[in-house]
Amino acid sequence: MAASTEQNLEGVEEAKVEEEPRVLEPGAAPFGNFPHYSRFHSPEQRLRLLPPELLSRLFPPGPEKKPVLGLDVGCNSGDLSVALYKHFLFLHDGETHSDASRELRLLCCDIDPDLVERAKKECPFPDALTFITLDFMNQRSRKVLLSSFLGQFGRSVFDIGFCMSITMWIHLNHGDHGLWEFLAHLSSLCHYLLVEPQPWKCYRAAARRLRKLGLHDFDHFHSLAIRGDMASQIVQILTQDHGMEFVCCFGNTSWDRSLLLFRAKQTTETHPIPELLIEGKEGNRMILKENASVER
Image 1 (cartoon, rainbow, N blue to C red):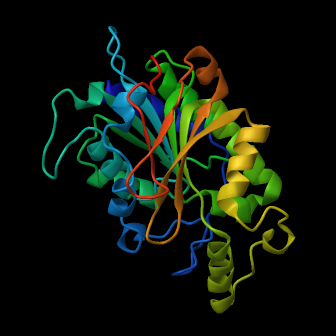
Image 2: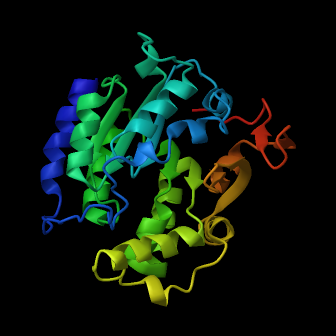
């Protein structure tokens, strides 16, 4: 299945619109495509906040044993993608599971082809994680590549999407409407959505890095109307504009980024969950009750 999926996706990648090559100055990374991102934002900071049993509770195995399908947008070189996969399947370093790819399949995309190539080479679970180069804001490419992957499993949407520290880069490069559109696409593609928004101070830091390198500022930085408490802004857009329900906040990383879980309202209507949340031992950390699940 993995080889077939890889070949099909490579074939449809030819449908992507040609873009001018991007020249990245060291330290600038205007699309967030830092070459060694995990060195200063380690996956472990996210994993310690996320219950390992999260996916098994949200998607308990049915009689047909369909895999959980995940979409990781802005995967960089795949370190966090691999870490999430191992975390949710209770796999330790060096450990593999012969049937693991039947339980969870991840489509991981990034705008930077060099980072994607590195992810492909270094991934220890090639049967379960598929890495592709994709500008998610390119509607034609997105539709072709994502539909091709989902079609391998007879699905039209993903069970869960991961959007980890990518909203700021979409916002800076595509403006307020671009952020709104990005979240609209994600909400239409996933039953659940896990979002880690960057706080406003990160926007200022990103703009400052460009100025120090003598580069042009982000086109939209000074005209952004959506600003301030970005976690609250993301919650508002997804819940008020895009038909999602805010499920919980798992807490904040050491670099002050919240992990926010959302659920499509049509999923809620089909599978109502009374008293969904309970407060954990870590203050504002929230965990899911065992009955917070959706059939696949």
